[in-house]
Image (spheres, rainbow, N blue to C red):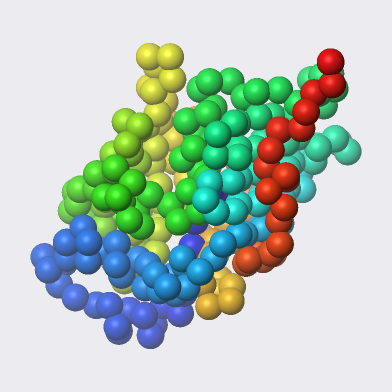
Amino acid sequence: MIRKVLGLVALALLVAAPATSQSVDDIIAKNADAKGGLAKLKAVKSMRATGKMTIGPGIEAPLVLEQKRPKYIRLDITVQGLTIVQAYDGATAWTFNPMSGRKDPELAPSEMVKEFEEQADIDGPLIDYKDKGHKVELLGKDKAEGADCYKLKVTLKNGDIQTYYIDAENFLEVKVESKTTVRGTETESETILGDWKEVAGIMMPFSIDSGQKGAPQRQKITIEKIELNPAIDDARFKMPEVKK
């Protein structure tokens, strides 16, 4: 899944504390509190985000991202009137790209399956990280996008590494760096999260800017609407049967 923000002044007064007193679990707990609290976050059973992705100069593609517990995720992007689908139902990852000339959905490449599994976690890797088999280390403090941040190194159960930069004042994510190994080659990417807004008592990012580190090409997602707990049929995430 696709992750989070708040009333900064009041929150800063509540969470301000000496940097040396913070532990990994302290920071993760305050991160959850900043978003609305663990109870509210876990009460979200499904989510639908509607917006647009900037994929080139002057080119915007409408998108719809849907997530549902336990591990369902689907992304629809419409380009030139054609809708590209990427989805995962907790077991099978599949894609449908009419722009490729194919008329039927197909299984996603193996290198994409791991990414689908990571993104399908609606809570993200920090919440209940021990139960999920992840490891989190505090690397101290660093600057990110002009903010003083706590730097958390997250080693996922599958071996991928993510580095979370969490604002030391409001305890919301500013940036996430990822290292992924595909076919023996390591790639590094970064995602910048911003424009946090409250949705039904939960802080969510409405601006998501991502790309490979050092590369000029970026993908900017602007969220226009987020629905929490919409009714979404499980069939939305399952690969349609291909007629022989």
